[in-house]
Image (cartoon, rainbow, N blue to C red; front, side, top):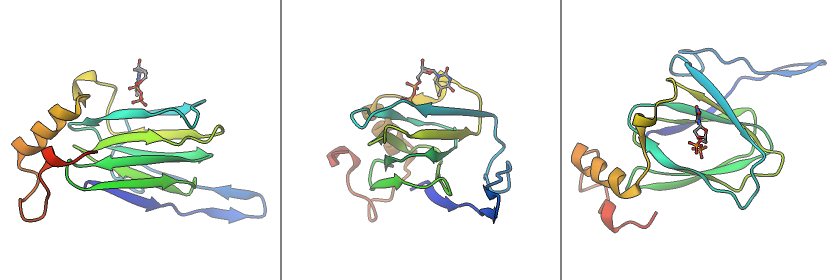
Amino acid sequence: MNIRLLDFDVKEDERGSLIALEGTKEIPFEIRRIYYIFGASDQVRRGDHAHKELQQILIALAGSCTVSVTDGCTKEEIPLPSRTQGLFIGRMVWRELHDFSPDCVLLVLASDYYNKNDYISSYEDFLKMVEKRGDHHQQTCCDPNGSDR
Ligand code: TYD
């Protein structure tokens, strides 16, 4: 799946800690947009979409949340408990964000400007696109239509 957890380098001294992230270096793309989510409760689910082209890094700057991801075949639940890690999510990955702690501030770094046309908001359409693109080989993947996400 087109995801990976990045461990950021923390510069620590007696004054506290600092993490520096630069586009195309620690962040594997040019950063065109940032946004952040806060004030979500543990009952809230956000996301529920995939992107055709957009790449993102999610960082829980404060508190924690969990990100469920699937490429239509494999599924993973990735807790984000630490501000020293970022979750890279590449193209064509369905994501759901949930289990926000009340103090969670989730920073998102994105590779492009906001573009509604880049969203795939129906899971059914997502599966159809995955199949059409032939992203998975039959030997290594279950039937995406048979999977419950
Ligand atoms: P939404 O896509 O529902 O957020 P999430 O995927 O985290 O659940 O976005 C909520 C609102 O914010 C919606 O009206 C679209 C708007 N929005 C922007 O204007 N710019 C952005 O960069 C993003 C991510 C959302």
